[in-house]
Image 1 (tube, rainbow, N blue to C red):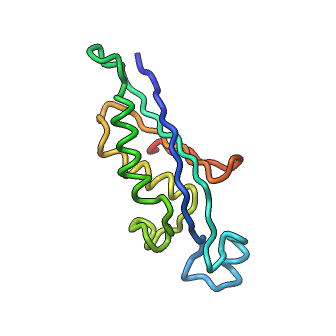
Image 2 (cartoon, rainbow, N blue to C red):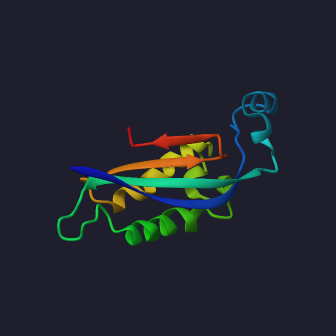
Amino acid sequence: MKVKVSRKAHFNAAHRLFRPDWDDARNESVFGKCNNPLFHGHNYELIVSVTGPIDPNTGFVIDMKVLKDLIKVEVEDVMDHKNLNEEVEEFKDLNPTAENIAVVIWNRLRPHLNKSHDLEVQLFETPRNFVTYTGN
């Protein structure tokens, strides 16, 4: 029997979507307002889910305090109130789209979890726009 447990978190961050190898017109055409050279921000909402067997000793899939602390260290402390393009190492050469941010978060969390557990990251860039990444 496997159970999925989830923890919500949030962070605020600025970013600019663009490709330095494209000219201004092409960046504007593809990324629109998100290509603002002075950046723009989002109030990101995050749901991290861990799926696995219930430990018969604790009754937990994962201790939610452990998951809370992991999200704080690996996501919130790294990305909250930051310019993703300029202050987060993973985005030095990676466009910080919602898709790429979700993958980066997944990659930061995965090494700290039990290998028998599945990990899912849902990232809401706006209340209506969100992405889900499960490592596949």
